[in-house]
Amino acid sequence: MGLHGPLEVLSQGAVENWASGRDDCVQHFEQQCGGDCQWGEDLFLDQCLQYLRAYRVDDFEQLIEDHCAPPPNWDSCLDDRKTIAAFHPFKTRDAYDACMNNALSPPR
Image (cartoon, rainbow, N blue to C red; front, side):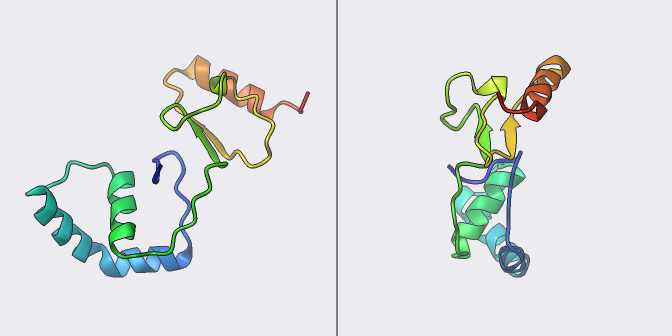
């Protein structure tokens, strides 16, 4: 499902790969898109690292996001798996506070 803005985990090697190849990516994708691809930073970074053939390990157990096949009632933030690092998105303060309180409460 690619990189998503709320949680992007990169190794030092991936960052070094990106830093040395970023200009090549810009040139390549501007050619492919006929100008600016109009991507956010998460999609650009994801596509650039793929173009640079960076080694990738997908871990779909760190983020629960409404755009990535979330489980039922994902937005309750009551998932008790120890691997979840983030829930996303919450567009109101009340929704965010409810999620935070549930996520930080002791397991039931």
